[in-house]
View 1 (cartoon, protein in one colour):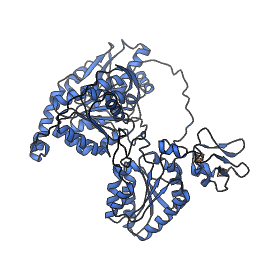
View 2 (cartoon, protein in one colour):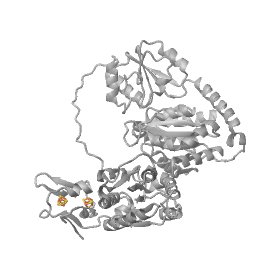
View 3 (spheres, rainbow, N blue to C red):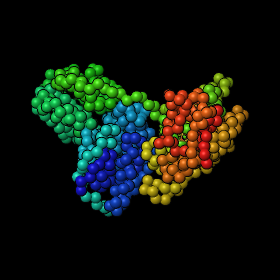
View 4 (cartoon, rainbow, N blue to C red):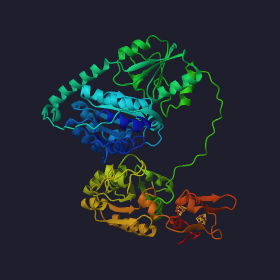
Length: 600
Ligand code: SF4
Ligand code: SF4
């Protein structure tokens, strides 16, 4: 069966074809499409198995590990920063080893396009001493997913499948194999020396892990392409780009490409033997110098360590062309003048309830507060000057706690307003809130509940009454969770009720002035791109700017920042772009001259 699949979709097909029947994941670009594809395959082919969005990557990893210890072939899927969250079980599982196949799918985001870091997960494969396979194309993603399951089964240890944004999101025709149901026979064979190992047994397991890695090293992990006399060592998407350049410029007899399929473990002696045949060698790999580091004698290596290859940013095809020119194997004239599109900063969607919430927060606290933000769409509260910090999942709450304590030990008091989304609250916001409650910290926590994990493609959160397969699930109430921690000041309000939000914020402000506990506000409005959100708009028949009243002050644009509000340079007035406006009417609160009007 031939299908036109993205790299992420291809990974799902490869895993399931190889017998994986338990996949747990947390959404994160560029990895988010693997799990929904697995769910679709399960439904379409009527196979058994369990595929879930977990509350976070650590939980996903541990749940998959237990399923694997029961003999099932499993996979966990996450983006690169998600692996940081899962590091504890990840490192441990490497030492303990696996039973059936265990694949850790990690999608890295060089650029970065939608991440906090450009970290290279292959380093973490090396750190944990597990093999890592790196596909160059969607087809290889499909093949390597199957290969990862087989390798994992053969050596009884987890195998990482590292993909990057371009491989995950590009598409290719792929002939996939038969998807057949497999009879699952879970069985947990007790073995405390392994599954509850004390330090002495950990030492033995570490020895076992080292032996496995030594055995894998002996297998060929690289392939040779082309016949030239200048050596290029590469892997992943860079290989695909290099092949395109070789074809376009006819470099077949100029370069020889050593393609590394498995960047760890590499047989360093064999690699060095190869490198020694050339006067100089260029290493092009997307991410950090993982392959380069494993070359024993790097004196003739041009790569990241000697500054030849840039150490940050994506290695796009244009960057690689420049590297080949500097390496002396490619001549080309820049035949195009790069036309840069005008910079447009990202902003919240028209009608987004988060905008109303940030607007109200800013109206009440102005420059008086420290605003700690979090990971998700609502990072864009930056534009409304209601976010000062964005660090990692859940850090809005822990930062609020930390700032409060830093000021309080000096006898000072600061208003601190933390904002976090519903999914992120469940992922990593609850634990620091427990800390803050227990340790008597005072700040305002605003949970921006849009009833979905919007930024990564509207995956369900634990508060939804449905799961990854849109089957029924037990919804976890955010307010009950917050109350169970002993929070006394809790208000829940529709984020479109801006005046009401301001009242809640003012009361919360007074509360934290006199209480040593956080005040929690849940500002709730469904994402405008969900079924529920779409059903609420248009809220008005028409929204328009009264030209006679508009002074052209741009306060609405600057303070409310809806992308549908446009400034007309000819009339020097604001107009509303009706092609994008969803007629929510929220912008009326932003005009001090009442120039924005709604018609019911
Ligand atoms: S609509 Fe109101 S806020 Fe916007 S530019 Fe006109 S007067 Fe100023
Ligand atoms: S009504 Fe106002 S806030 Fe709502 S989408 Fe249109 S311009 Fe934006």
